[in-house]
Length: 229
Image 1: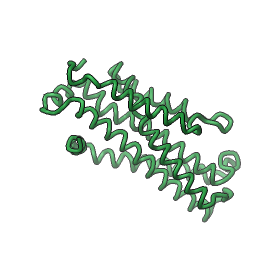
Image 2: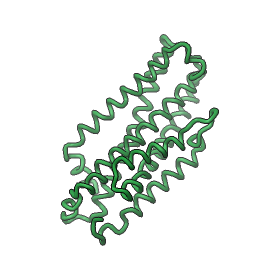
Image 3: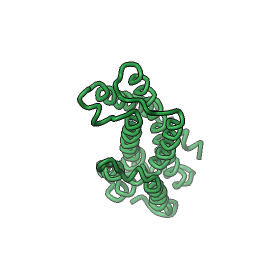
Image 4: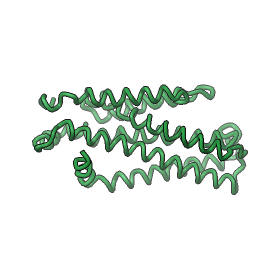
């Protein structure tokens, strides 16, 4: 399986993945810095630095779950549509392993990027706020530790949840449907209603993560014995 993953990454995509992630980090950081220095928005949006970190955590998860749907579209849906998957399936390797190698890349890439972007962007914003910002600082080291621990769990849940749009994409053979379904999912799970969101109940994103992995498995469980649709 590791060999298949390495081969997939060597197909000229690794550089684009990396640059895409870096650009996404920069965009999120830029937007957050912009809001940070809009004085009339601070009290309403960021009453304290705890809320600042919460917003960053939510934004990075939303962004990279949608990013994952784009990867699913490129790695699986597009190859089905272009019939290039047929060529891959002529290799003396289990079809299921080929598909699952792609899914592992998407899930692991999503998890890593959520964790790394969360850490880098939140560290940057906390530093800038302490130097020149006006957001009240109430975060203690213990609170910071608990926040990052929860963020890692949320990132793990998001990685599994990012596979859910695959069911829609495979059903309709549509890249657009894959991306749109991911937007719908994160809109429902991460939408903030008077300070409450479904993602704040950790059991919900974890359940969706398990469901996402199950959907991915069921979508291709018989791929070794069936023709490409």
